[in-house]
Image (cartoon, rainbow, N blue to C red):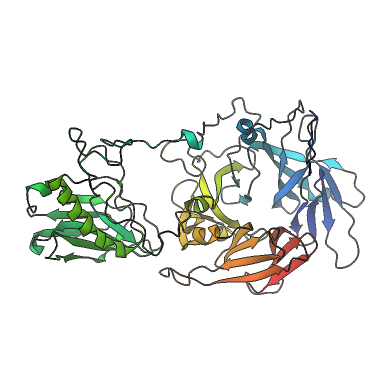
Length: 564
């Protein structure tokens, strides 16, 4: 069937979905999706008459409809509302539909407006909002909140939000397409061949294995070094300190051909994070029938639940071929460590015979049970790209935000968001958490007090193991929110099947050392109510602390879920 096509050059203003938020326990603010906001008193029975009607002047020839994101009560008589609207240029030209311009054509305005609560009364005529400040970005915010400790708004969205009235707008960095992205070669690496050249004068040499292999759990890190099996135990010197590792091997290699596999030598080498020295130990598995044995270091994390990116703080900074600071990926399964011996023996044999041993390494990095089951394309699509923007109540950018350089955080570098707080949930400072994506896991970062300005900072407090992996298996996920200490809730949209929508609940681990947790599934709707349009929660009056009721709005029904 032919699809109608709009060929006019006039820009069409799109409506917004209606939105609402509680102003206090007796009134609610509601937008109609057409550019009006109503303040309605909450009554136990009968109709509610608006006690205030407001419009937003967005500039230009078009006053765009807006969406309500957040309400902050500054005082008993004044409230500040966070709104967003589509930006329509004053010339009202329709944006280009070409592939190269479609991603950059749409922009969105963020508005902070205030309402004088003493001016609210029945029968009021529509009036314009009093605008405090205005920002603009390339995406609608996915989460907003006012943090009283720093007197600033936190805006989480798919882009940063700049001041359009400033003299100089930020220059958007160029983002290459997938066809333009190419890996950066490391020293003496030939990306056109299948093997890394370890000697520029000898292109036939095979790939040199990494100097060690490592894996981790929530509370420990295990590092395995290959050593010649004839190494005496009394020649191995290991010293653990809280922040560093010293490892010396006073021995000789197997033969002259093994000189290409150097013995480990670390002197007060800084670790990625701190360890408990009283619980650290090492073992030497000689395996005399093989050419190589394993020196295994077991280190207990001082910050339990923190995920290490590397073993050493200086990893991935090596600019030479000394192998001291090369990047070594984590081995997924500790059972893969046995491949170290096989790979090293094949490597040293290849050096003697000239056989091509390219593609080998210290373990394959993927356990055999996972082989053939990984869908990298589906896994990479999990999570939403996001930036953090801070705006003070007066509209200025806080002075404590790092502009550029190593100190720049989520304000300049994007993160992958898996879950944001449930709309309507009680968000004290201790409950302000974001769940981001790291590999297949979902580490939880909480905004907690710190010793550096502004005396607040993001800290990794817990982890939902394999959360990104399980979310990747859901094809109809519409909303993903979490309640602190209660779990992550992934809601299906209910539009892909006639069976309705479900909510998948992933509980946090009962203990910090646990790597598994409970999960459950509940039916939201059997399909008769239509697609799921929105989700939120309300606190139970007179209920126990933190007890909430989930409110799910479908096209034809309002579904309440309690006891979660």
